[in-house]
Image 1 (tube, rainbow, N blue to C red):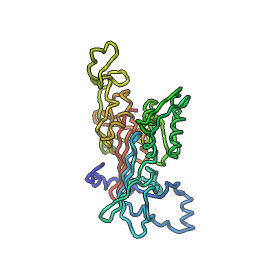
Image 2: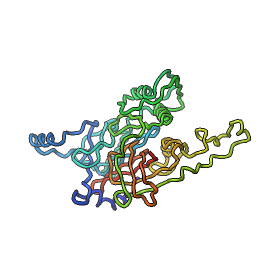
Image 3: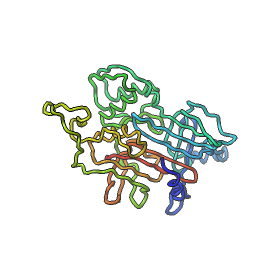
Image 4: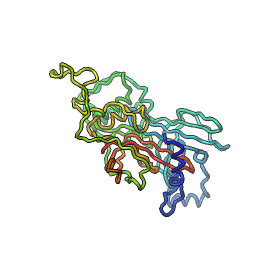
Amino acid sequence: MIGDALMDSLGGVLGGSSGAGTLPPPRAKVSRGGGAPSAGGFGAELVALLTGPAQPDPLTAALVEAEVRLLPAPALALCRLRFLPGSDFPALAAGDVLKLQLGAGDDPPAVFTGPITLIGGAGGQLELVLGAAAAPLTRVRRNAGYENQGFADLIKLWAGEASLTPGDIDAGPKYAFLAIDAQASLWEWMARLGHAAGVHVWMDANARLNARASRGQPVASWGWGRDLLGLQAELHDPAITAFAGLATGKAKEGAWSAGEKPAGGAAAGGGGSPAGGGIGGALGGALGALSGGGAKPAGRVHITVPGCPALDIASPFALEDCPGGRGDGTWVAIAVEHRFAPGQGFITRATGVPA
């Protein structure tokens, strides 16, 4: 979580009015049910001409702070909203679906859609936590076998059990026979199959289930001394492999003692072990599994940038002019955090691994 002091120091830059050499003011919009974006351009002008100026939405007007944490399976994303309710604030209940949009303009891009899972607050403020639409899959466990099924077939089949809308799903490998057990939930099995297939599994801003590899051009490019507000690079020489422990006396027979066997039979380690840095250190295991399992041993970067609603799980992004070149290149986001506060601005943090 980004400290209030940082938000205060960046508020003048990220929340300033548009003009020469400044960013456009960020905006937030909260709506019920994840409805479709409103009409823009001429359509919006025509509606305003016929019906008069649009009235401020009570949810949006009462918003004090928004924080979004996006993570791939087996972790769950969440959104935390704080409001200062007025007399026209609508009644809300657990299970109601809300959509948060952040960015520039009257109808900014969506960054999260999910049901209310927690309602609380103090001092006149109301706090809501929106959960991931995939949460029901974390409660489904079974022993089952599948014959002649493809990766995409299984992902869509399991998504249907939670009434999830499929998004962009790679075809992936074909399984002559696959057995799953009740020691893991269906959401965890999605993560395991995705890791084995080299793809990320996550819920996007419109509550659609995606299971695909990173592809396409970077959604944004940031440079040190320009618009890269913070950088922590955890890098090492790819030619140097991590020490994976000594083999037991039976090493010649291919045997390893518990905890000593290198992942994938190679000597490089670290990809499958929990990592504490970046967003949500307790979730390091999930991030470590999706960093390539040691296949790309160039480390990772943690960045802070002006609000970028386009940055999602599996989104490629580029860095340049980093000190000593440490961080230059194209990266893939494996964890993203957005934070917005009216009058203070909109900032994004992300953890990336080499593309």
